[in-house]
Image 1 (tube, rainbow, N blue to C red):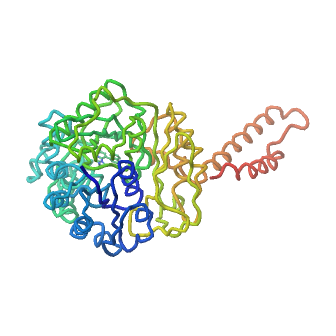
Image 2 (cartoon, rainbow, N blue to C red):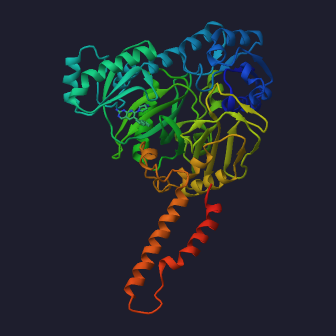
Image 3 (cartoon, rainbow, N blue to C red):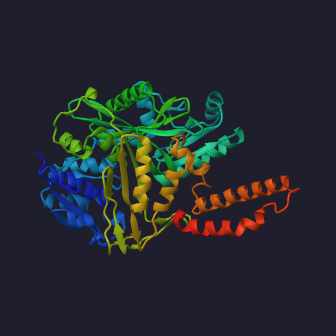
Length: 504
Ligand code: MV4
């Protein structure tokens, strides 16, 4: 049984994993870069070791240094968190060679799913729907043109070694096919050292819906339902929620079964996520599998009532899954927002620096996974995500309202954060009504602008003023007809007073 785990990560996820270790009576070991000496994950762990200078390719990504610490402190296992080495098959293999348990899937599963063309082929074999397209690397442009004519334009060219939006290209018309494929190939070579690209039919305005799965080393696999992750900005998720507002019980059941089939096709063991793109008619297609614990795992934990890190550790201990599919159900509604140290009112510029004050929200139905504290300086070397706020309520409507009031309660000074932007997302009508897809942020730019509420008030006032004017004109025969202009001073006063309470 695992008694000591090295957490090969930093920030909120390192602490998240350590909490479950503590709960399970497992010792935790932190590793840290020179920029992270004062980081909370170092303080939280039972032991901590420096593994190199600030840049992650000299610390959190150096396999030899991490393995050396694990051996020196006799850790039984390594949890990679997300990012860094979490989907590195070489690292998973190396752990095994060194007799250390990698808390994650096999290198075979990581490799198969990491290569998108191989993954597509596997899914086709397993009867999982994939986007119509090619399942071999494009070699011959004339053949590619023929295939594209069959599929129909527009299409996407994607790098086989890419994923998460990296190495993608949209092709609208025939003249773009040849240059598009060539450019995609050379970009893929430069970015990944692998020029294999494939083609998919372009799905317009899709939803991003993913299924959480858990699989053990005994052939058992279950899904823990979906997460709706369509609110994204530049392929970065901003908000995630479960259940998806567009899902039906029938489609959920079918997609869940396909997610399990996808995991079984690569003999998956551990926690994993199957990403689908879904169109408005709820046609769904496998996109990729993430072979790690994801940032947004807490919403699933809350609605399904499962500690995913605990299950990962149990699976790594070779225990059989303790849940059967029939045991699981979705209870209530959870929403997560990602809080970044960036300035949403200045083109999302990174805003590292010293946190002067932080008052984290508390209360029923609120979870906060973070790591920063007052006096802490956020280093500029890593991901700018500083925390995740999760709300739960019996209904979606209440979970949204709770998130709005929780964002109002959350105060951080010293740095800029995306909190005001997230509030505007929670307030935007398409989000409130649950009618949004991956174009949500683009399609609602005006409503998501800093002074939207103030501007809306000006527009409302203008409309009222015009209406009063109109009434005045209708009554123009009468004496002392009210003049809109005559009233406007008090309107501006009202506006000035309101501004301070409306503005976030
Ligand atoms: C697509 C697509 C439309 N059609 N593939 C972007 C991230 C990567 N995981 C795949 N992505 C997309 N693939 C086809 N055939 C549209 C996207 C896409 C997207 C997908 C999910 C969430 C947000 C997105 C934003 C833009 C484009």
